[in-house]
Image (cartoon, chains in turn orange, yellow):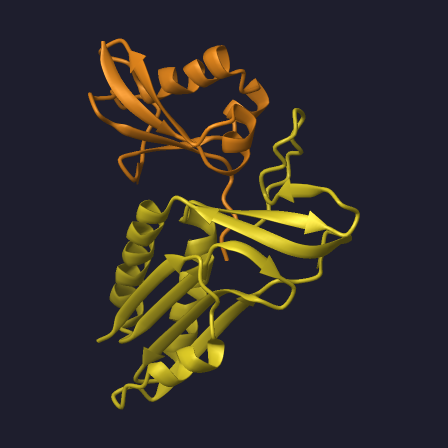
Length: 82
Length: 150
């Protein structure tokens, strides 16, 4: 198992009720599996999961990227800066 | 060349911003101010709250500035983005682009604000006169609408 840190902002922070948590996941887990975890373990609706982008260590990441020990994962709902 | 990026909980003093950034090599300075508007899609807005994933936002601002310099040959760039609670008329984002000539300054400024809105992990919550609030562009209800707007 490896440990990664999830950071939550905006809608997800309010929905999940915290701004971060450390999560233990199997080695070889991907960004896609982190998104599935949000649905199964934190009750994020599939309709929301579908519109999320993901950043790993401050870079937008593809769904098949394999996560590493200590990664910082941010789930990004549609952005609205400016 | 000046590059300045700030993303934080601070009030943007637009007059002061303008006076701080003078470069005699630039014959054109284009400034964009993004302000809090009192309406959105027919709803009356009384204020906004912004939050950001700050380190990634700064990184993306740097990338966008680098792209704009490569594409348009501009010189100075300042991007200030305010976070927290804003009232109507407050400045949420202040961008200035200095270049030798006006054309590249206009083009680069538009590029920067467009890319900022598209890529930076910044979120905006609108507070309505009716008393409710909503994360803009998210439509993060249980049944989100299909439309995404910038």
